[in-house]
Image (cartoon, rainbow, N blue to C red; front, side, top):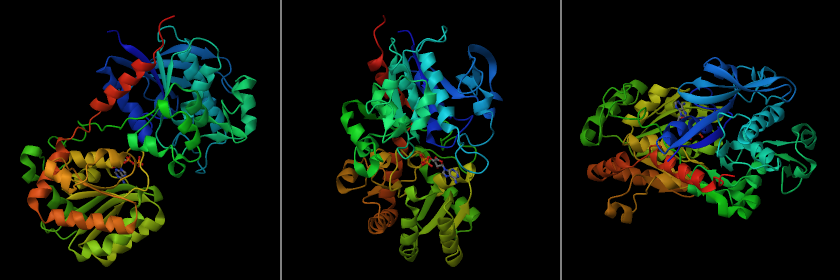
Length: 484
Ligand code: ADP
């Protein structure tokens, strides 16, 4: 079987440039899909962080004028990825966050910057580069979504098209005047094209015009077809329900491997699970918690934002402490939440500790030392923290939304009797139901046999990219068009 050629179009790709999960997925898919006989090349804007790492760069195509200046497509490699980078200094030669200027606001020309990314993606899709003619173009999020509009309205044979939504909260909506700069035919400005409530909707266009739509978990795929989660696009998604699919993300199970993780005080595996307690003591000691092995220790590693529901945990905290529980929290974000957890740590030393900031090493230690990891998100397209927690034997306590619903098996009576439970779920994301779930977890913690079973089930569940890669490969093979 010859390799299927796919162009992945993404505005960020790990490890070169990252603000969120989109970068992780775009960075992980090529290696995972190589095992499925899929050859992925990733098209990214030539930000300084990309250009600095690009090696063996060769010009593959040139533009006299790409949204206001000359540009080149460079083929090359960086961080093990096969890339096409758009060398267009007038659009992308800006350091730091790919979307925000130094004042913390969106760059005023983001509409043009990401229309350019999409335009180049479409050009490669339509055959601009002889040496790489993709059979599928896979666009990620609104920044790449217009690629499908450019190909659709080109009225030429085109490859199969897929779009993945990583977070419905970001849609790329712009005023109507931008349409004049996009270079699309007038008929594209319709309700069946790029028009959206009197403006231009980039994500909307991609969702309307692509062969397939994916999002990062089956439950989120269903949720975004409802007004509560669809953020205005639920109606359109319902009309396209037949082509909407959810594929959960994986994690890199070589980076996240408790048996080999060099950052841990103590390595362990499912077979040597009893060694794990040494990490708990190290974590308690490092964070200034009372080093008492018998106290149930909850861990949190998270952005502190409304989405993540940690205000609910803050409210539930006194009840946990009253029952002898402890909390180790690592996170940063909302100043109100930062202040709240800091105050809790000050008023109940030994029971609550928090570190404000981003710290990969401490994140690993919390996953390896906590008894449970709490993820009370109000919505969660996929979520990675709970996948790491499963792998590290810290049963997740999660709100039953989005990817959290799909990746954790609640320790209800049936699942426990069948020996398949991996954590605790609750719904709705509210203080009462979270409190109930935390109390269930504390009961479990008192029963070493049940807790051990939960840990082992989680550690044995497959959270790697292998399963997701097979699903993406199957989707790609479904949408390739027969050779002309
Ligand atoms: P989101 O992308 O919405 O922030 P995810 O759970 O999908 O949430 O992915 C976030 C990843 O970043 C997780 O692996 C999480 O553990 C990690 N992370 C979040 N905050 C921190 C932090 N302060 N320090 C280290 N890692 C963090």
